[in-house]
Image 1: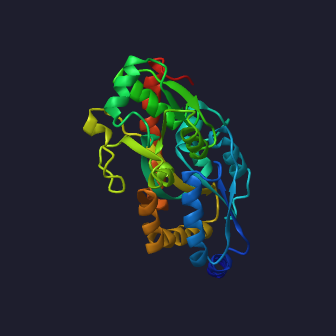
Image 2: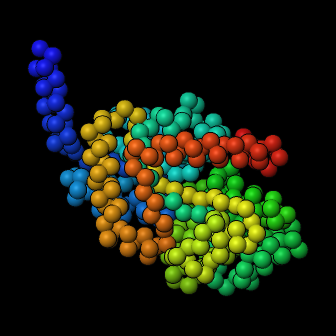
Length: 319
């Protein structure tokens, strides 16, 4: 009997794997359309459809520093037909601040990390600041007057700016733009802010069009996509912060579905079209599969929680 049941289980499992997906897969992007995360997820999801054998449609659910999208994903059936793109705020800010009761990333099955890229300071092309040094000098001469656009109060970009203020001993006028990079772009173009904090990839379209330029990336490695933008460590700042995109599903999603999704997205990731596209938009490919991404996320959380606790004790951020 046990052999028969075991054989039957194998047949059922193989059938599920063969049939998945039987309908469209919903991919939640918890940020507004037009931002960097939205563009990356739409591109790779489109390329993943052929190897997956089904349609993946992207739905933007804005608000709450990605919390609104998380609520939708956490409330969905764990059947492989609802996915979510996680960013820094989903993995770090929301659980550290306790914004969703009972939430942690153990409520999700992490499928893969597809990109990671450092934060940067971006200014309009006609800005009077031609270097980070010039910006810092001006900020020291006019405390609280130079306007810096971040994505949300308490977000990753806010934390990056606070570290820059602390290490450079300056103070900016902080202006927040919830909803991702898209409203930051508008604010930079219409003169609402003097600079923006986000990744260069988020602003690649403006940089390529000659409307914006980067002053520094908060990393210790020189970017190949932006060779004219120095890393922060080269300028004497010990700041390494940035974004990433992780694909996830509600916890307890069937293994067959997770395996199929990982394989389809990895094939899309490895494609020449996606790799060339990432270079064009200035985003760093950085794949971690299902077996590795959970350990990486746990380690990242631990390191950043400790850093945020230090900033809280110093009175630089609240919780």
